[in-house]
Image: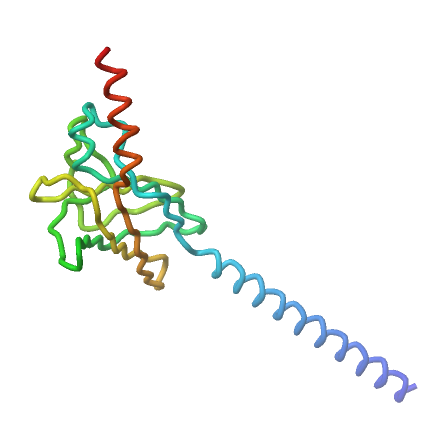
Length: 167
């Protein structure tokens, strides 16, 4: 009877150990998969349509940002470059009707989705620009590069739209 009891106990310990190891492996796999989706998705850079005049909208860039993580992400730094030289900019997540960035910030948080607005401090038109956006989710810091170029066909379409509005 002692030998049968020992064999039975040994089998129970072995099965319990296998269940514990498989549970730990599955928990690690789920944790790794949730860590992989902790990214921000950036839309295309474009001039915002919410600005009251076409000319004012040409001074501002808007980027739609989607947070695919369950945790809040923080935009910490936005830098702009034109032909390799750094530009001084205002950036934030809201603008007024003239395209001025309201409460230019050093950082803002994104739970689900938000907009990033960028305006040059020298108030020149934005026709070509590279943005470098640094964000943090938890302890992970990521840099994202966003190019923008105002294409000729966009300008022609915008001018055609202005002609219709004036008539």
